Length: 308
Ligand SMILES: Nc1ncnc2c1ncn2[C@@H]1O[C@H](COP(=O)(O)OP(=O)(O)O)[C@@H](O)[C@H]1O
Ligand SMILES: [Mg+2]
Image (cartoon, rainbow, N blue to C red; front, side, top):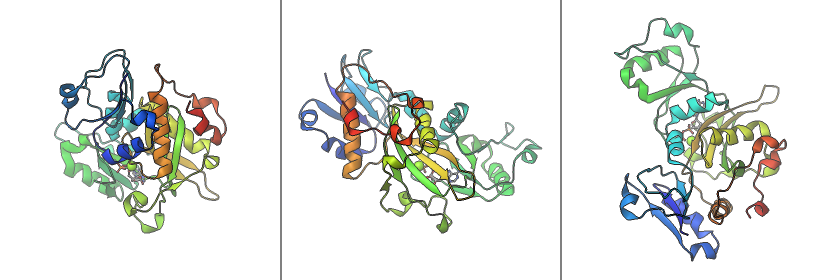
């Protein structure tokens, strides 16, 4: 049996995670394969019967995989997660809270259908291309006039963009979900005072703070687990926006699920190492936890003793 980690980007994170694995995994038959262009792995090696493969953000389906091989993180699910518009539509369909989508109705020449704007609320919105990362290509639209001008100017190419209403958050988490439980959670340190909607530590390069599992709350943590399940993923790092202010109704919205998250720091690397070892050490498919059964936030966390 070979154990294979396939990745496209995220070399540094995977290197750090593998370094935290127990020696019996590192010295055994663990292989880390990089797949930069489609079909690259087909030429290199195939995935054989009884092999276990974990994809880390790499959806290349040109890999030759034996039907009896165990694979975690299917190609189609990674592709869906990477298309941020389709992912949000899928999540919405399956009852995961996402920011309200503003869906342009255009004719074949790319012009807005008359009357469309009268149905749209005059709200602040964000326009982004379907594929994006690291806060890039982030256009803030201040109200309905801006939204209509943006759609007019983008014309037919608007099909490659999505527009969503700004969610009034004051906290942001990254919730790393794996097989239906939370591997770890980070507070991204959102700072609304800067006026930048993306003003979290991903942009400001500060440290993300670990949220201990006694601080997990079902009302924001379950939507993260649900997001990963909705996209058909085995694991994913979910960007969660939370609104929780004294005297106001609380609410939650999911931004996206990352399939090749950056992981740095002993605790976080070790958590992924334990999870991957748990997958690699079973000759049969590991089942997901049914998180619906849990009613306490702490029960949603992976405990060290459970990776057996
Ligand atoms: N509709 C929205 N309302 C408020 N903030 C948003 C909205 N969409 C995205 N953001 C902010 O922008 C950041 C980046 O968005 P995200 O969807 O995670 O894409 P990426 O990380 O790929 O750039 C989020 O962490 C969040 O802070
Ligand atoms: Mg993000």
